[in-house]
Image (cartoon, rainbow, N blue to C red; front, side, top):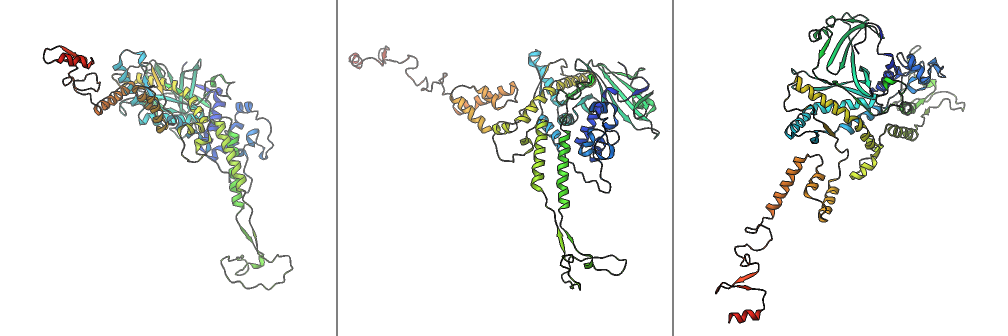
Length: 568
C-alpha cells in the first residue's frame, strides 16, 4: 500500500482518533503538566471535542457540574473549572511517572543476555562472533535506549523502535524510539507488516499551513512523502526539495520517492507494554496495541490529586489569624488607612466603654489541620493505584528499609515480579526481531564481519532479585556433603549468567587449585596415599617378601612358626 494520496485525507486517520486521544490523556498524567491535564479533561482538543470519543464515552449527556462541560470528564478533578475569583490551587502527585519509571527499572536495570542458539548452527566460531557483535548493540547507548522505550511504553501502551544507521556518526547501526502516536501501523494476523512514521515540520514561510513528512517502511524499502495541509487534513503532496528539512532526501530517493534498504525485513519493531488492550477491542486497527499501566486508573489518579490538594488547602486555612476591632488600628490621618504593629510591646489603653460583648478584645482564629484523615486517604488511594497498575507497595519502599533475605523480598514484591515476567513475554519477541534486523543492516550497510543474520537468537533476562549469597553457599555445602552435586553444577548455580565456556574454565581452575593444595605423591599414580613404590618392597609382589638368600618369595601373612623353621 503506497503513501496516502493528495487531497483532503484526514490526519491522523479517523480509525486512530480514539486511541491517540487516550494516549494524549496518559501522556498528560505521565508528564505531570497541570495545564495539559486541565486541557485533556475539559479544554479544547479534549475528549469533549472529539466526535468519536464522545460517542464511545457517551459524552453527549449534559453535565451536572457548573460551567456546562459535557459528560463524565467534567466530573474528573482536573475537568472542574476554577471558581471565579480564586487562584488555581490544584496540585498534582506524580505517581503515574513513578509507576512508569518502576516498570522500566524492573525490566532494564540489567542488560538481558541475547545469544545465538547453538542448536541452530554448526559453526561455533561464527556463533560466538555473532554473540559478541550483539553485545555491542546492547552497549550503554543501546541499553539506555531500550530502558527509555520501556518507560514510555508503560505510560503510553507501547512504543516503536526503528533501526537507523549512518557510518559517518557510528560504525554500526543503532536504535531510535518513536512514540505510539507518531506511527500509523498496518497489521497482518497481529504482526506489524508496515509502518508509516510521520512528524510535523515547521512552516518554511511562517504561515498557518501544516507541513508533514511521512516515512513509510516496508520490508526492503522506505518511501518518503512531503505534504502541506492544515491541522486536520494531510493536504497536497509536495516535492521533497520544497522544504529545507527534507531537501537532503531529494538526492537519496528514486523517481518514486523510495529508498531500497537491501534488507528483506521491516526496520521498525513494535514494543507493547502488556496485552490485551481492554478499551480498543471494537477498533480492529488498534487491537494489537498494548495497554498502558494507567488504563482504567485515571479516576484514582485524579482522586489522589484531589485529596492532596485538600490537604494543602487545610494547611492554608489552618494558618493562625488575629482579628482585632477597627478602633485598635493606628492611622496617620484621613485617607492613609490603618495599621497594627504586632511586634510592639507597650500599648496605651484605649479610652472606651466595654459593653461586655468582647468586641473590643483581640481574637485569634486557627482551624484544625486534618493530617491523619488526609494521610490515610492518600495512603489508601496510593496503594490502590499501585495494585491496579500491577505493582507491590514494597517496590516503592512502603515497607521501609529493614534488611530482608531474598526470599522475603520476593514474597513482598510478588505482584511486581509477576507483572515483570508478563511484560518480558512481550518484550522478548520484539527485542529478537529488532536485533535480527540490526544484524542485517550491519552486514549490508556497515560491512560487519563475522555476523550471521540468519542465526536463531535467544534472550534471557537476569533475575530481578538476586539470591542471598549466604543462603546459596549453605545450600551448595549441604549438597556437597550429601554427594549430590558436581563441581560443574556448583559453578553453574553460583553463576547462572555465565556461558558454557566460562563455567568449564572455572571448573578447571577449581580442580587445579585443589591439586596444588593436595599434591599427588611421586611414584603413586593412583593417588592411594601410600609410600613411594621405589621404597616399598611389596610394591611389585603385592604383599610378598623376597628372601635375600635364594630369591624365593616369602609370604608375610604365613604362619610365623613355618617361617622360623625354614630359616633354621
